[in-house]
Length: 276
Image (cartoon, rainbow, N blue to C red; front, top):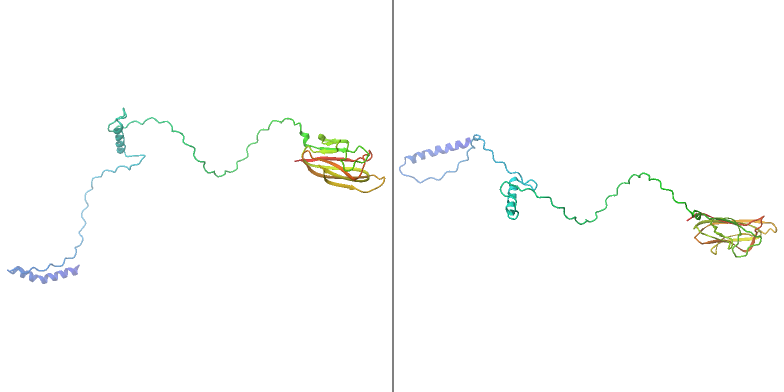
C-alpha cells in the first residue's frame, strides 16, 4: 500500500508541470487518454447498532386431521351450514355458531367371516388336572366265567380205543363252561386264545397218540416199549392258539394200547392260558 502511494505521488509530480501549462495555456489542446482504474479502497468501519424492531405476528399452528386450526374449523362448519341450511330446517347458521352433534347411529351389519388364519405355535404341556371323583360301582356281571376255560376227563373203560378216531373220555373230573363233549370226545373253543393240552395215558401195549386240531395233526407221541404184563405210563402236551368254535381231540393210530382201569387211569386235560 505504501509502494502504491509512492508511485502515485511520483506520477503526479511528473504530470504537475503539464497541468500548470494547460491552465496557463490560452488555447485548448487535445484531451489526453483516460488513466487506469485505481485499486479498490479499504473496507469502511462498522456502523452503529440499530434500534430493536417491533415483534412480529406468530404463525398459525400446523393443520392436522385430528386438531385443525380453529379458523379452518369455523370456516368448514360455516360452509357446511351454508350448503345444507336450505335442506335442513332448524340448523343454526351464522358466524361463530357451531351446530350440536347428531345422535349415535345404529351398529352396522356384521361382516362376513374372514379366512382361517395360520395355526399358532403349539403351547407348552399343561399341568395334570386334579383327580376326578370315584365312579359308582357297576352292575354285577353274569358272563365272567366265559373268559375262563378248563377241563379234565378220564377214560372210563378198559377197552382200547378205536384206531384213527377221536378217543372218548367219558368220566368228567372238571369241565368249566362245558367245553368238552363226552359223546364226541372233542373240546370246542368258546373263548379265543392260547390253550395248553396234556394227556397222561396208562398202557399195557404199544401206544401212539396224536393231537388233532380240526382234522390237522399238531403233534404225536409214541411209547413202543412192550413189557408184556408190565403197565406203562406216558404223557405229552402242547400249547396252541384256538379260534372260536375250533375243536381239539386225541386219536390213536395202529398202536392203541390205552387202558382205563381204576388202578391205571388215562386222562386228557386242557385249559386257557390267556384270551386274545
